Image 1 (spheres, helix red, strand yellow):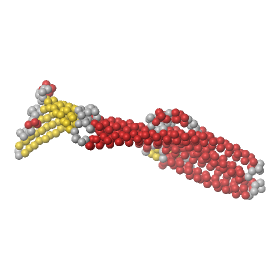
Image 2: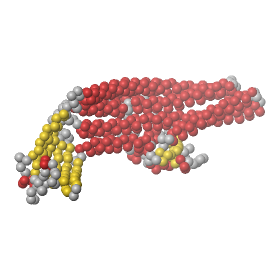
Image 3: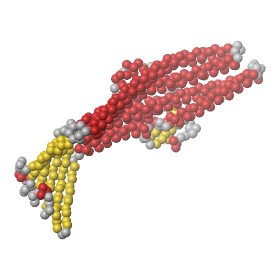
Image 4: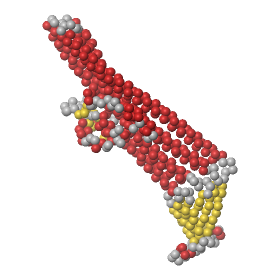
Length: 477
């Protein structure tokens, strides 16, 4: 699903400000930036996303370059010799060579030579001479030559660039997603600390009033002041963490891959109470094998093996003798119809043969290519083992975080119950301010831990999908 099918761009531009236009102290309604919207924006506008898309252009260029080895070639030469006021010879030659897929070369050549000192075998009729023929490899390069090998490898490289693009987007979304959930966690932690600080200030004012009326001992004002100070420290630290995480999140927000953007103060993450913990990791466990077949990292390794196998086949081809048959029909252009002058008795043919005696260079190249294939196969096995481990570990972490999330949720409720009970006792004169503050601290800490665990659960989900190599598919099928 593309971004313009999911969210109105104008809406995002309203809630996200340009770096040079950040409004301080802006009084506007808060806008919610959910993870799906954020991820889609990153995929559409981040420079790395643009760079990933360029990978496919590299693949197309590589294939185009390799196909150029099969382009027809036009040539023409002029070779004259003049000495001592005498024309020794004049040679004119023009032609066209056409390489073909099976190593056969077709060519057409026109020669017109003249002169007193011309080599007899170079003599042509006054109207010139046309040669049309082919050159056929019968030994080396019959089944595979450098031209064909380069094109095959270029096509494999093109497939590899597609896998590389997927891998780059996979990594981009993982780092961006982790930053989003850190931002989410620090925002809600800041809200909790802010509420706790305000509550401590209100209680301090109430305690001071009670002391003035003689209902509370003066020492309670010290306890209340300490709580205000402690909570102000925790609030300021939480505020710093939130600001830093907001800055970190902003590095993933760009416009068209060129203009950096920044979150305004009016942008908020999704509400903690509406969060989904995605308790569905069993779906991925059942499809691990099928997902690994298309994993971008493993796909690149398999394509690398295929490229090395092409090199191995080409090296094996060089062990054969170089045997090439050449045949050219000779035609003297006469009148307007050249074909009328064709005579199958006029031709040039030849046979070229060559073979290094020891073949040390060729045998060494073949051994080297075989080793490279083995190394690529071992590299694939290593990567498969590492990716399987990452998948298992991330699934375990995700499952464990979901179990912990249930415990933390119950802990928050239990601390809330204890706090309510302690406040009733305090109002009835059966408890101390110290105990109320202690219960409040437990409740605050449990809320913070629950918020962090919610964020970690989503981060573990992202790691699982990233390890499977399909994170880029979740928002960009």
